[in-house]
Length: 137
Image (cartoon, rainbow, N blue to C red):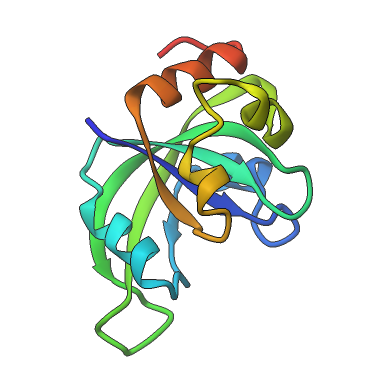
């Protein structure tokens, strides 16, 4: 299993809306590195759900339920989507400032490559975020 982080602005698509929808296609990604990360995702992989721009915190965990396919928002073959389902809400959000202050997390791609909307997370980083968020996997 691999671990990831996906970003969404809560005004565009929030964790609460994701919980209501029960499943979503992660589309509209127009960055090649982020697209490559979508392509590498496998069914069952876990992704941290990060509220960007507003909130600046990880609020939940999603699970890949369908591997990459053509992004339905464009006819350009270069772009992909992946389907996610909510897995678990964090009991307490983990803020970007907490992440930057933690020795284990300060080098996460979220911090180093801050503009990347879909990024890789190591297993140790994932487990630490779960611990800080008050959940067990």
